[in-house]
Each structure stands twice: as structure tokens, then as C-alpha cells.
Length: 35
Image: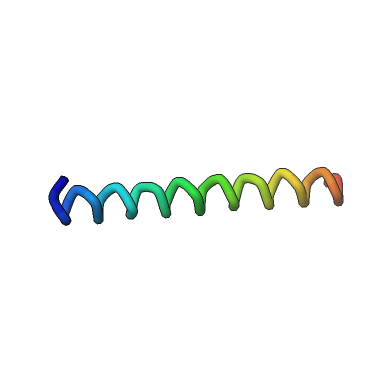
């Protein structure tokens, strides 16, 4: 496994985690304070 592949994997993992957190926060806020 090259360093570039490892870096790309970590980058994709970080982006995926951020997306999940953003969706979780948005969903949680919409549940807590319904529009």
C-alpha cells in the first residue's frame, strides 16, 4: 500500500465522516425543532 493510496483513503474517510456528521446534525435539529 503506497503512501498516496493511504492518504487518499484517509481523505475519503474524513469526507465521509464529515458528511455523516452533517446529515446527523441536520436530521437531529429538524427533529428537535420541527419547521
